[in-house]
Length: 360
Image (cartoon, rainbow, N blue to C red; front, side, top):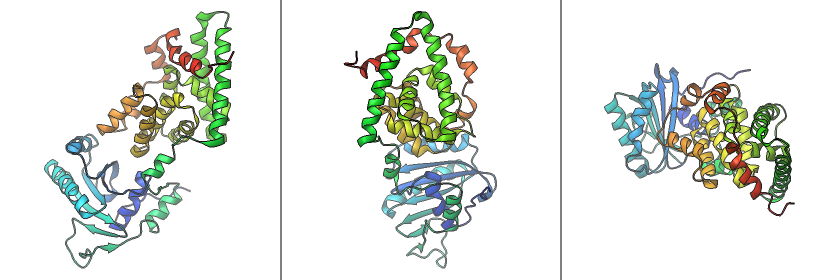
């Protein structure tokens, strides 16, 4: 059974929906929800959030984003003290008015009350605010029924992709060391080194596809399979295979798999999977998770090119549609990159050496 679309027809609906749109309950935040079409029944085009206070110049990209998305009207929601929310709300309303983009509602929520910047009628918007509960309304019920989750805050979202610890970390470290030694021994014993790049890439590409299919059907990969996939993904052509396989029907599987591996893999293998998580999350409109994933990737390797590319896109508020319409197919990747070469494997070989120190 498919849940009916959530309509934001009242302030309570709006404030109840925002946590599920973002994936967490915001605090000290300003949220812009943009639509194209007629009123709240129009098509949701983009949702973006800023921490408050907003740094100077950070809003300069808002209007270009909304124009790219052909947005006709917006709903604004600020969360926090009035002294923090109101200046940012006033600036956004001015920018949108100058651009001819309508603001059909602008709200501020603090604690269990909200106020409207649009409504001036005391009978419905009293000075003391109106009470609301974002967790028990109809929108929250519909969102939960539809499988959406709103974590308590951004810290909870960060913890959802934090590295595993304790016994799980020890087991994963041992599996990585063992698998890395096996891969290194196999490469060293190959009778025809010229065949190594093509064979390695072909096996890695096939493993990516099997892992996505297996994760969708059975869930979490065993430690040794996760470690082996992490090694494969350190080769750019294999990583990009996973990137090109993202589509509307599989993006949730990508988010779940790459979240799991971002948590479990050893730090030096995290940049590719965290970047893939960022791409998958951004693609489905979850920019908060995408940003946290990119931060994980860059914390492990500040120079990792895919993570930096995604970070720029998120900072510039580029539409995730670019990940739908401009990604090459696997065949186009093969045509543009040419036959596999040994230099493709050099980053992976360095990681194997790092994780097999002392292994005969």
